[in-house]
Image 1 (cartoon, rainbow, N blue to C red):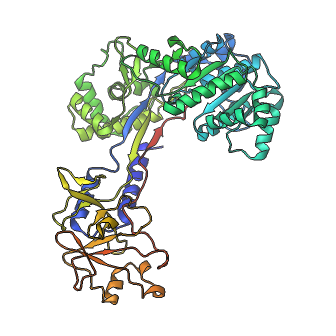
Image 2 (cartoon, helix red, strand yellow):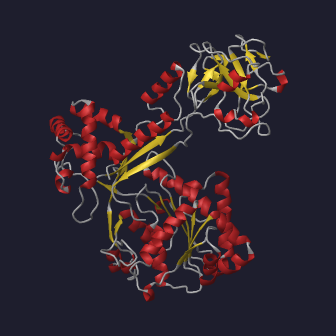
Image 3 (cartoon, helix red, strand yellow):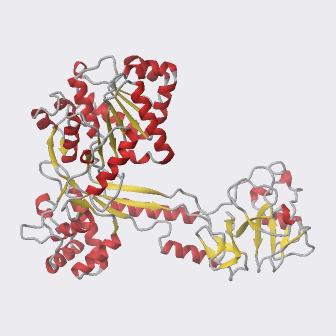
Length: 601
């Protein structure tokens, strides 16, 4: 997949969508919105992050040979593509996964705090499967895995199906599992209650119910007597009051299952930050100990062990990139993308590829010397750094970076089949809120797209949200007339999207096209949206008000004013209408575009 092409098309379509619903009539507002698009206010440049290469911990087959895993794990944990596929080869394990398996083999509790795409779930699934194979418990539950969201439980259910059932004969399926989160139908729930799976996937809310509902407590919690493993995924979500609730839930579960030797496992990508990993381990161990009610030693907080994908050469000085070779590589990548080597070994030694990994991917932690991930950068930020290092223009550097990332995502390791560069683009899409204006005539009013109640440095000037007519693009101020002021004052409506209440309305303001006199019904109804003026209720005339130059309100004047308050039709007086639209509302959330293989686990 061409991530950059997908990203370009996505932003182009989103911009077209947000710009097509309303053709804004006021030139000042249109220029303001054009400036917002120019500054990429609603879609800032995406953040670029490299998925690092993890140090090898051997293969599942080698761990079986070493006696660290049961021999049948060799049959289960393989690369599989479909339900009938027994697997083309054994899974390769990362160093942190092997360390977790070793800690579990000693019977200790632990926490894994590694980044996205590091295979965290296999650090507890593999040890659990190993213990179930070594010490079967046919009529009982050996492990409960708790997720903060059902989507994570659903994903893990698929992974268990893939590893423990795909390509495995019925008589070789020695480890059972089930999901019990509240989304199952009655038959699925009944099967879980009857069959007592070895591994139970649930969420913390349902786990609370299992401890309180008589039937489920008797069948499932009763079957979990002497429970061996409790795993909490996404440990960082359990904080504050929710964290206290889950901590008490863990203690109640341990007592109900009569499992004083319960092995607790936590995983998280963002548990704590510190100047060094050693400091972070101490803090994470303290938090995990409080949450689980079990001592977690700092040395049992397992982090990721990284290694380079590129090869700077034996004589290279870390972090130093000779200017001329780098400039040559930049020009070559920008001018002739197909001239870059496509083979893994050749591309890994390219000066530009080395620079990208050093600048975007990896940093050296002082004083330990550990390789750690770098914070994400935007491509313009990375291009500026490359321009400074190579002396080439930033535009050329931009093209060169995209080119080497595209080629690196396709260059595969000859043995491990991993790409040289697996990278992600994190794109934030803002909701495209409405425009806020001050209570001033057009041409002099303050405009902003950021929610504020007052004009900065002018506390006496309130800001009011706008709605736009879908037909003509005319802007209306979304206001209300508080009853305590007897309709003499306009105020911005607190929630422009809420159903209209008494006193709410849209304030029409125009110097060049004043609102017609209220007595001229034909002229008034020609100004209203078509959905407001059907023949069935044409005789309905809502009350009007005019705003004087001082922006006070006077009811029902005899001459055409410069501005009118037009309340929306009431539900009991008018047919349903379409609300006058603002700019499209979309949630602000990150969209992640990923180049490279999906990580296992």
